[in-house]
Image 1 (spheres, rainbow, N blue to C red):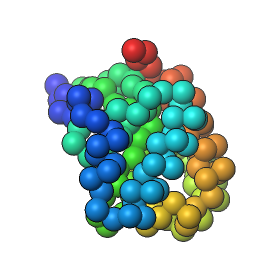
Image 2: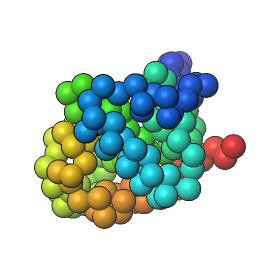
Image 3: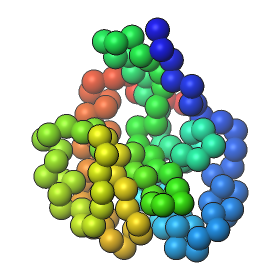
Length: 142
């Protein structure tokens, strides 16, 4: 049975953000922390070396893969900011389509800068994602 290797670590979110060399990504990261903390009612924590996560849930797929993951999160990568706020569900697709300028993977949204998207729609998408995850999986409270 496969287990997720990434987990929450004891590393300062503030230090991680201050070490981001790109000023725009650093400023956007500060705003994303505020937004995601407000929506999730969870404190930001480092999930692995480069993801800032909020909350936690336990999942186990039919394939046997299991582990813990943040309810929502993001990673300010060099090429783009990766937003982990989308379930990939078709019924959530209209919310994604209202975001603005982005690219999308299977369940990850990539943005160049926060001002390219509508943060009100992003907050709604995060709320829907959290609701879906906590209905389907076990939310872990600290």
